[in-house]
Amino acid sequence: MVKMTAVWVSAPVQGWKTRFVGKSFDREFLAADIYPKWKRRIATAAESVRIYSPYLDRLAVDLLGNATLGVESIAVVTDLSPETGPFDYRGQLLAICRLISRGIEVRSLPRLHAKVLLVDGRQVTLGSQNFTGYGRKSRETSLAAGADLSASGLVRTLNEWFDEAVSVDGELVDRLLERLEQPMARAREAIQDLIDSFGDIELGYRRDVARRRFEEHLAQVRLRSTAEGLRAVASKSRFSTGQETV
Image 1 (tube, rainbow, N blue to C red):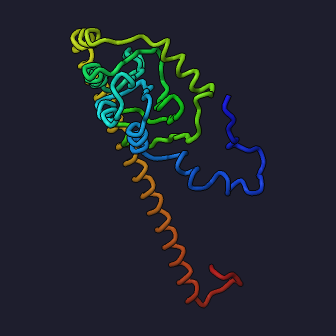
Image 2 (cartoon, rainbow, N blue to C red):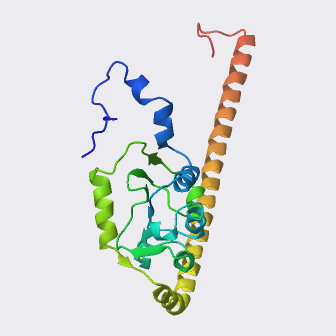
Image 3 (cartoon, rainbow, N blue to C red):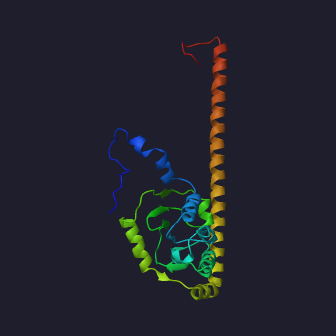
């Protein structure tokens, strides 16, 4: 097991900010689009490139096009089943077709949910971002580890998953595209209807909240104006009971 410096501490340690919250830290822990880091790491890979992702589309195809390695050193592990619920299952199947047509090995592993780029068997980039165009527009967090993790339990498990995954060929994907075209169309329509309904409900709710806040603000303004008017009248009145305002 590779030795790693602990990042999380149970109590403040003198100098820990200098060690952990520096430029190297910011380069590894990102709350931003990780695509540029993926692209650079793939372009500089010397031995192998492997993607693990339940969801992928044309972005993954273009991303792997940056590799200088032969296609025999590139592989993708995904979950071919629609059970995981990709928004655009057809887009995923078409991307897999393109990968296979380029000679890139694609394997399927049930219930895969990890999003990992493994370069040269030792450089790991992982996080919440999927290998899709949609993922680039989302709020994602990622870890681009700079350490050599080849001897870690993480890489060992990733290798075990790769061995367990079943190879996918173009004929299988073609059959899925042909047989699932109508169900996919119905699913896309249902999902779009769900998205549209959510938008209508959320917009109506926000309008109601804005109206209530406006009414509350108007009531406060009116109350404040009434009180200020009473104070103005009282200050001019000759009648007093010893109170500041009658």
